[in-house]
Amino acid sequence: MVERRQLPSQIKRIELARRAGGRPVVRYQLTVDVGTPDGKRKQLRKRYATERDARDALDEIRGEVAKGTYVHPSALTVEEACANWLLSRHGIKPKTKSGYDGVLAPVRAELGHLPVQKLTRRDVNELVTRLRDGQVARADRTKRRPWSARSCNYLLGTLSQVLDQLVNDGTLVRNVVAHVDRVAGKPKKFATYTPMQVERVLRAIREDRNRHAWHLALSGLRRGEIGGLRWSNIDFKAKTLTIGPTRISVDGKAVEQDEAKSEDSHRVLPIPDPLLVELKAAKKRQASEKLTLGTAYADLGYVVCNEAGQPYHPDTLSKMWANAVAAAGVPRIRLHDARHTCGTTMHLQGVPAAVIAAWLGHADVAFTMRTYVHSQPNALADGAQSLARVVTIRDNSAGA
Image (tube, rainbow, N blue to C red; front, side, top):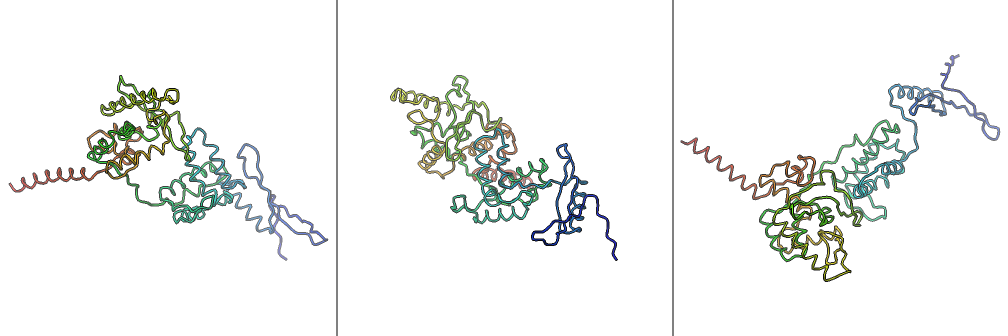
């Protein structure tokens, strides 16, 4: 006769009566201490069909508690985790929140039903693959375009933040997204204008009522900074321009932001003479329009506004810019690419990198040089000529 092993104190054999007078069902109830995460004693109680299952569970839990990797079972879903994380993002700007909402939308739609403790790296990888292939529909069932590598990596980065919060809270042992490979992709290329093309644009917009807006863009201001600029931000006597409040587009709506994009975005810039001339002309033009409309004029103080003094929607600025450059007969580039043109032009003129970063409102000089400074064909030609001069001198010296 095989001697029965004594059960550990944490496991109790119990008999559960069946209905209709059936034989009792034997279960093994596990009750084990699992630490004090919040200062209070915590116990896990669970029933198993066999003694072996109960013993294995006890050994596993003891090992995890000893290593500090045990987490209490949670019914929290991926959907709830995303919602909670978004609620915890206090103080973020509307544009940032809109970006988080958008990038987490497919996660919540496709994986939201899963308990977050059961989310696997495979689940995330499969979602990314489907997004890359354009196989994930929107909430309204319309087809979603294939996602770029940049968008997929933004999703992975945001979801990783969601899971990091749960690791810190003790809900998860580890962040599975941290082990998901980021999507390889080609760096995004930005188009810029050469000095000759800039000159063509400036000639073409000489009669454009909003030409001062395009001068501001080519001077490196962001679209939101142009739209939010007030006359109170301009000191004509000191010839300075203060970047502060912005006007941006969030979910298709124009939104006023009382602060600049970042601390470094808030800056005071000296106004170049050509820009100063255009700003003075714009102020004079607006004064004339105000006299014409009288009380119907919305005197809101915007530097860039329509004939009635009302600010443009940010997307309208982009459309007007597209029309302006089309009239100039130059390749079409985005309004934001005018800012890249500014950074590139300053770099090619020998302006120090730190000065370019400060002008554009960046804290990281390396980011400025990596993202906002680009080579141009004529610059490469100049480089070739410089190299040719050096090589020629060396060749002559060698032959002497």
